[in-house]
Length: 401
Image 1 (spheres, rainbow, N blue to C red):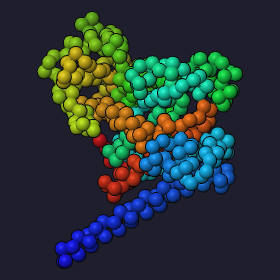
Image 2: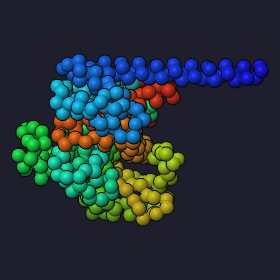
Image 3: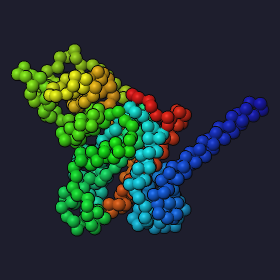
Image 4: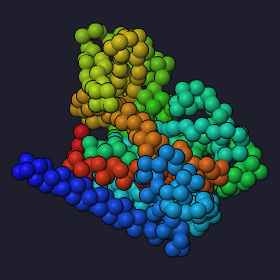
């Protein structure tokens, strides 16, 4: 009897603790909603936005207007659809509030800002920005939309800070098609690196704390973006293709050499086995090396390198990165920054799997921005909540890699 009594008391304590935690989380979501509430012109869309967020954070299978309406106890999806398509509210303002929320709770002076993109597979030709194009989501060309995102990766968590839908020239060269999809007349063609730079400029203007920027070859291969990063003294580790020409000191003096040719000259002893970060399957070990690059006119305390990563299972599989940082930056730091891209890819998977980032059924450009922004807000809430569960001090910032 005494043993059963102790077991009953233990179970009661566990249930009470779970209920208390659920109340804390619910209150946290209400507080986040109050933070963004001023971006909604009327009470009805403001209240429905909270129901939308609750639905995105729920366990329902699909997170489109029909399912979210049912989750909220509404008989039809009209209200949820109106929230995305017709109600008066400022999605960019919500994005700004979301960014402040992430900085407040996960801000870190050593954060890595990651430029990356993800695809949204679609049917038909009417969804804004859709066309047959390559997407890493499918690993091939598909009929899809592609969006560029800016993410912040810190030891406490990962959150998406900004977003923009890529509009191919097949759209921007067709004003009538753009107007039919709700794309404003002043939105012209921008390359993905240009969209990424605009997001970085917004982050700088908002004084987002960070220490590094990284991105894949779409962004690292754009020399104008790399020059902009250098002009703003932003440390970076940017992936480039094997054929990327880089300046190095050769036997004939300074000259341009393809990245793969420069690394091919590295002696075997100069490769080090390092962990680029922990993933869902454990530590990510690769062989790494770096070679100094030559740049005229820069002070001696600034370093330029070509970083290379070699697969352990297939030594012929290499990846290359152009790096800019203080000259005393250790190799392991560059490796850890490069590894942050994997964390953001996992965040995309989480965003699509847990908060319905890609579950929308809208075609209009403004509606896409609204759904994606609310999904980013839900994802940030999960990141902050998890950080607070694992570390009660999360939110004070100041930690570094």
